[in-house]
Length: 99
Image (cartoon, rainbow, N blue to C red; front, side):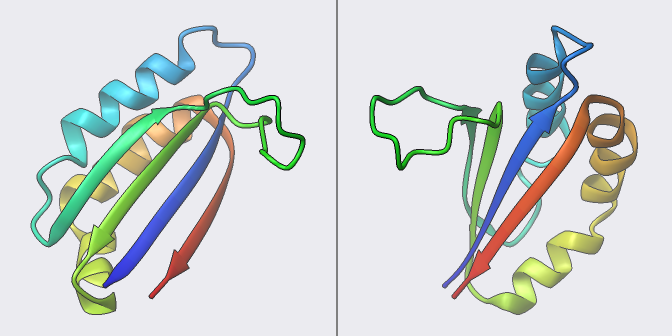
């Protein structure tokens, strides 16, 4: 199993950026072959100080292995998402990959 977690900081100058990011992910990323689990959502506030609350949206994907994740990265729909959505609405991204 290979997990790919993406943390997004959206453009504060665009109040609809989080909605655009989520809609774009639904359009371009959901259903890319090789994805076993797909979940995107907004940051949930917490009273716990150890919980990072500085981001706006997170994406959690699970693949069978690293090879499946590597294929996802070059899939035309993923490339289109990066170009048409991510680059327009995000100011920062951090990715955590683990197996």
